[in-house]
Image 1 (spheres, one colour):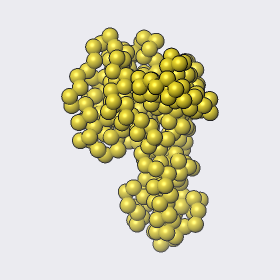
Image 2 (cartoon, helix red, strand yellow):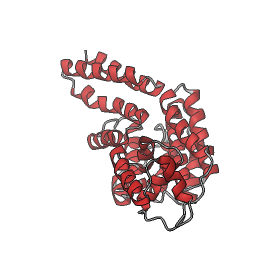
Image 3 (cartoon, rainbow, N blue to C red):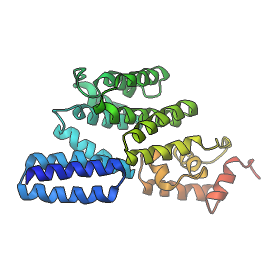
Image 4 (cartoon, rainbow, N blue to C red):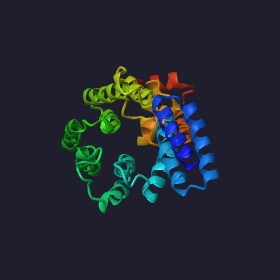
Length: 282
């Protein structure tokens, strides 16, 4: 029964990567029940590893981070490259969301894996990027390292790393770099039939490739966070997409949006978009 539980959990991971989140959720629930009946502590811990792709594909950043914290804290995947990728992913999340110290603590005592491990050729460059995620040279070095990921077991890793870099270039306003890397990720996911993450990357691509809005006027009575929320909403992003981009919850976006509407005296998103570029006093 524990083997059946393990196989069913892998089906959950596969279905999430394929993009069938309903089937993934069903398999995951079934695998948990089987693991409980078998009283298999190993399979029980391993289930979180298979839940992570489902949360990522669903765009539930908080759930995904929570699973990563569990995986890193329990060393799930210690006999594979996933042991390193889980930790590097979590460190990246912290670095990109303002907690550089926590990111560095996660990596401090962990050496890079032997080169024969899946994903290992890119991990030193990924580590350097985490320490300085906005530096063009560390980003370029990380991108170059992706050419060393040529083994079948590294295809998912290569696409994911390109996705991360592309999203960061987009955040920094480097549209050409962002589009190149997001297209790399999309091509990689499409080639292996990974429709789940491909959908998320496609959303990012559509957002980056959209016409660049006019820069907002400088006298707006908004905090920096409110301004980022306002700009995202003004170009047509949903609250959930804005939350994913900023690394916060949809409720937090709703809170900021209510403050923005009040401060700018607007009633809807259309009026908000107009107010961002309207001359002061108009």
